[in-house]
Image (cartoon, rainbow, N blue to C red; front, top):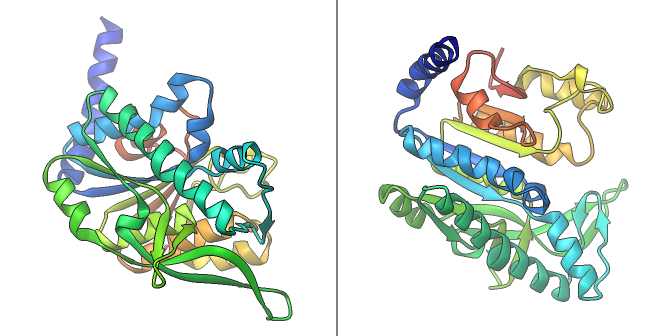
Amino acid sequence: MKDVISKAATLLEALPYMQRFDGATFVVKYGGSFMDSPDPTVRASVARDVVFLEAAGIKPVVVHGGGKAITRAMEQSGVAARFVQGQRVTDAATVDVVDRVLSREINPEVVRLIEGLGGRATGFAGTEIFTCRKLWLRDPGGAPIDVGFVGEVVSVDTAPLLACIAEGRTPVISPTARGEDGQVYNCNADVAAAQVAVALKARRLAFLSDVPGLLRDPKDPATLISHLSVLEIDELKRAGVIDKGMIPKVDSAVAALRAGVEKVEFLDGRVPHSVLLEFFTDEGVGTEVVADA
């Protein structure tokens, strides 16, 4: 009986959050690393949480990655992967692999996972949703570095997404985009997810990865930062706490918060139901970032 009562207590704890978020849009950036797991329960964990969000009256939108799968496909095709400042150098051969893996392999698989658990989802290639400009990097002296067909999302076509949501379906979006030249570009999935959150006026934006959240010491999970304000981000960058691959993710979070997203979460997708723990419990997990203190 105690176990049954504790289950009821858990449901009651979630109730005020469900009431508060009823009808709200949540954007979840689903790391491609989960799709690489040989464990089917890991691959399905986030999908199950998305289905719960649907059932709870929330409107989830998923943007997924797929970096490891792209690298593996490139190796199989005899194309060497190169990175500059964390960006994948994307020539014509590489962008074909990127488009195939993200939009025609991973995207349909995420949709199948959600629908296999009783949810309703529609897949979108990013080229149907995003337009972009070519991304130029800079060396320490300020000179431009060309990394090929890498794009920076500049606009989001919300019409097909809103139509999908109105039908009670979850949009699942790959991080590719169409340039002004008509070319397909590879885009940073974190930046794309933040742009979607802003365009849809989402209440929440969650980044799921294979780390516990933002850590003061990347080697020590016990140094997890549970709460941050935008004002503290620059200090952490200067201290080197936020660097390398975390910078685009954190900068995207800051841009989303300044554009009206209420809160951004950095969650460990390896923790079962981390999305539900963050959104529907008093304690939460991972790192939450808010616009001010």
